[in-house]
Length: 377
Image (cartoon, rainbow, N blue to C red; front, top):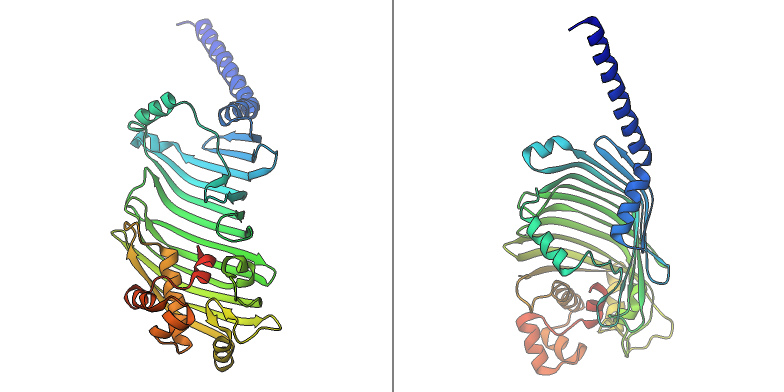
């Protein structure tokens, strides 16, 4: 090969390399428009994306918004950063080293029948498409998310079913970290930590939880702590005829839960404190089914606190078992015990369920505490 031939090859190779470089630069420059248009088309007209930035090994998406038919924003994520490990493809596995979700917001609404009214996500294709996806899923490599971080999230939850009057509960400052999550679910431990707050007129409650979950079997070990939850915010859940109006009141909850083979065992403690009844309350008034005079007398002796120990236990596969009802029944029975009421008094005098109700309470602590149950459902 002559020197002239080598020069021609060198120049030609340089020209091809420059051409490819220009193509790559153009693709990167217009990737925002290409990807944005394609994703919005796939998700539907209710979704919009402001910008997508593609880099080697990572994708950043800004301002993902979903609106309802009235034009109200029901889902919004200000920032989403996904970093992938492409070497995982050699092992036939999608590995995402980190997913960062910045300032997400969601509006959740439950209708009067208990159905999810919002958000309603668009259908992702026809039945044939879904069947094809189901077929493809068998050969799709699994995905592993090493770390998922949620920063400063918010949820607005409107409940139109349970209370007599719809109740809007706002959860703010949601900060969460999830480690080692696999899709499809596996029995490798997935660890999580959660911090959040629940603001209300009586103050802002703090919520903390952490633990591990084996998603395939639902086995888990976790601890949760709630401090300063304003019970007056939930008054429409528990107010019934004869119930006294509460001007002020907070509840603290600590619980450690363990689930093995779909059976839960969760001991805990709840403390109701700072109760202040509305003026004009009479002797016949009740607080969560309890005579107000007994509640007031106990609070006076106990430093304005009503502590109750409880244990939630049952089979999650039993259709008759409900965690919320089990918790509330144990809690309400514990409150009655703190007030010095016997099982007979609880059944006949306090809750008015008669001898049959007393029998049920003695056997399974059921049919009582409807007021508290509505709070925690």
